[in-house]
Amino acid sequence: MNTGSVEATKTPRRWAWLVLFASSTTLICCALPILLVSLGLGAVSASLFANLPILVTLAKYKAWMFSGSGAVLALAAWLLYRSGRACPTDPELAKLCETAHRWNTRLFWVAVGIWVIGFSTAYLALPVYSWLH
Image (cartoon, rainbow, N blue to C red):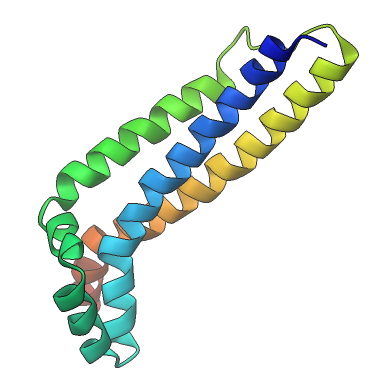
């Protein structure tokens, strides 16, 4: 088995973790504080923002963060579902390739779910709440 080919099958998995990390930042900056306040834990949310100043920066630039993570998700979707994607003909490498693709697909959809939750809480929760009341 060629070790270069094995490394080539591990590279897409690294992209999947990057996508998951990028979408998780949207959840941490925007959904977590809203969830804490909704549960009556506003002091915990304030304490988090006071002790972790990076959260203030993430919240301040949330439009850029959502745009960037959405672009990374779009790139990941293209990489996962593009036409012409093929696994090697070697049975061992083909099995590794299919396993990596299956895990990448799972991580991608988890990341999309996290991104949608973050986007919904950051941009849609207040207008829907205001519309209902």
